[in-house]
Length: 112
Ligand code: FES
Image 1 (cartoon, rainbow, N blue to C red):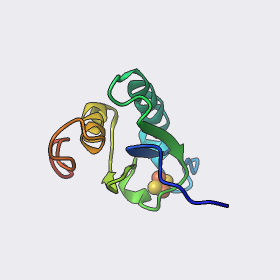
Image 2 (cartoon, helix red, strand yellow; image 1 turned 60 degrees about the horizontal axis):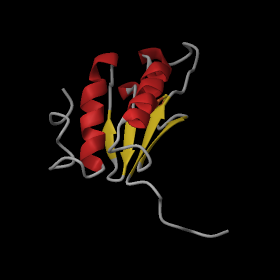
Image 3 (cartoon, rainbow, N blue to C red; image 1 turned 120 degrees about the vertical axis):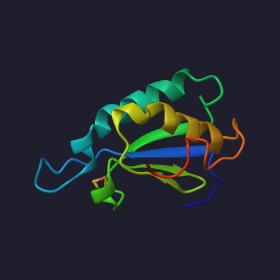
């Protein structure tokens, strides 16, 4: 085993956990489609492709606030992300990747 630094300036985790209605989960809010759309947008973005990775993942632990997206670094959470929030999440990813000033608030501030 060996440790190494992340090859990405920002790694985006989109929870797509689906509990099939037994209890609230991010898939209830369209997280699967959100993850697919985010992956495609990052893949097509000349400033993000190769330095930002979007990965779908299992439960991140904040199920009641989902759908959840985690940007690491800097450890920013986007909670309650809906289909209409894609551009705001992308703006935050751009800030975290150093393409915008003021990373951490480029997406229009804290939760609305
Ligand atoms: S189901 Fe998404 S954070 Fe738990």
